[in-house]
Image (cartoon, rainbow, N blue to C red; front, top):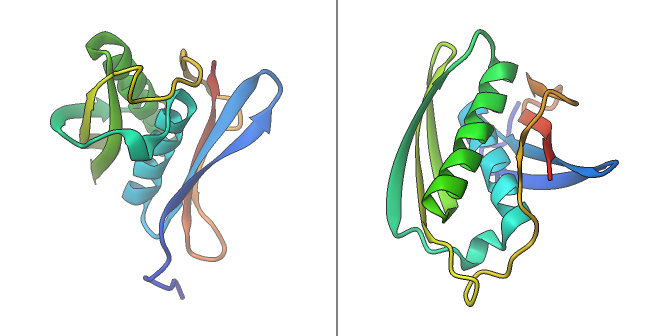
Length: 144
């Protein structure tokens, strides 16, 4: 049985020259949200990003794993083209389609300590599954 009081979290994991991102939560939606926060945390400290502006996303793919890659690449694309950083996400699924909202603010090097640029999500170590403990895990490696 899942303890609904478990706080969703994100983490990075080592992978040669790239960075692994993993979101873990009690729902698949929240695991996707946490994976996106892990991407933000490669670029800057998410807690320093104010949730001022809202952006909407949609993606569709044949399965959950490919949907995770499309989702993270959409987040990376929006960060790059809008020159924005995000600190909050809300994901909803309808089959293998995803609609989402992201909140953030324009990149400000004086406010946001810069890490490294994320080029894109890959298929390396790609996995979306419900673990034996009932928590959902959404992970992949991103190219930096």
